[in-house]
Image (tube, helix red, strand yellow):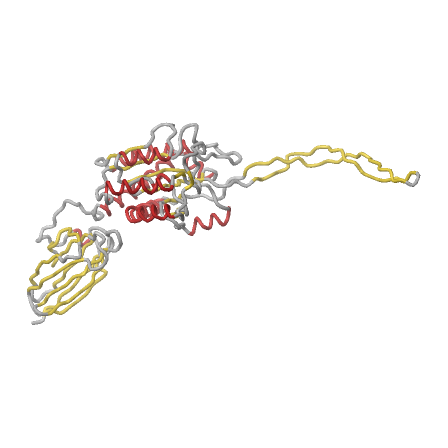
Length: 449
C-alpha cells in the first residue's frame, strides 16, 4: 500500500537515475530479466492491515509475498528463458532504495511491484445496552431575600454505545506508474467519495529520506528523463495488466499515478509498474487476496499481460513463430490470412515492373513490418526508418495484384504506419498505410497498358 508521500532525495534521485541512463542507454529490446517485488516486509514494515470489524486482520506484507511467489512461479513456467528475480522470498524488511538497488544490480528489464491498497475507515456506533444514571434537577428558593440553589437527584436510563471501524465499500485492482498527473476517472471517483487514501506506508524512522515532489525543478528533471526512457513502456504494460484484470471479472480501476513520485518506480532503471491488487479493508477484497485461488488468478493475469507486452516489444506477432520463414510459394500465409485487410488502396499502373520504396515518414518509433506480394513474402520483418527500403515486383496480367502490409509490432506509437512510394515508369504514387495486430493494410494494382 503506497502513501501520497514517497521517500526520495531530490537532487540525488535525479542524478542517480541520470547515471544509470547514461551507463545503460535505451531500454533493452529483449526481456532477459524480470524483477518481482513483494511490497513491505518484516516486523518493521507490515504495510496495511485489516482493521474493520470482523476483518481477517490481514497484513499487507503477507498478502504481497504470497502473490509475488505465485507470480514468480508462473513467470518461470511461461518464460523458461527469462531470469525471474524476487526481491524477497521471506518475511524480511527492505527499504525502498534497497529494492530499487536489487532491481538495478540484476539489470532487470521489467519491474513488477505487488501491493495491497487501503483507505480511511469511517467509525460507526451502535447501542449495546442501557445503564442507570443519576442526574440532578436544579431549583432555586428564596431565603431571606437571597436565592438558594437546591439540587434534587433523580435517576434516568441512558443508552450505552460501542464504536467500531466500518469496512470500505470500495474494491478493485489498480495499476500505478511513474507518470505525473495521470489518474483514472474511476480512481478520481473513489477519492471524491471517500477522500484521499494511502498508497504507501513508509518507514518514518529513516530521516534521510524526504518527500519527492514532481513539481520541483529537480522533480521535473527526473520525470522528463524517465518519461523519455521508460514511461511509455511502463504505461503500455500497466494498461495490459489492467485489461487482463478486467477479463477476470474483477473491478479494474485503471492506470494511475499521483502528482508525486514513487521511489521503487522512479529509481529503477527499467519499465516499472506497481499493482495494487485489492483493498485490504474491504471484506470481499480481503477474502479474495487471502485465498490461494485469488492470488493465483492475479499472478496469471499479470503473466498474461507480460506475455503480450513481451511479444510487442520484441516484435513477435501474436500466434506467429518469430523464427518462421514464409516461402514465396506458400498459397495462403498464416500471417496474412489470420487478419482481415481494413485499409485498402487501389491505383492504376502502366508498367509490369514496379519499384517499391517503403519507409517511416513520421516519427521513427521502431515500426517493424513484413510485406507480401500476391501472397508471397517479399520483405521479412523490416524495421522502418527515414531511409527507404527498396524492392521490385512484377505484375501478373489479367489478375488482381496486391501488396499486403503486415505489422510485426506496433512500434512505440500504435498503430504501425508506413509510407509506400510506388514508381511506375515516370509516375510516382505515394500511399500511407496503417496496420496493427488486428488488421492488415493493402495496395491493389490495376494494370492498364
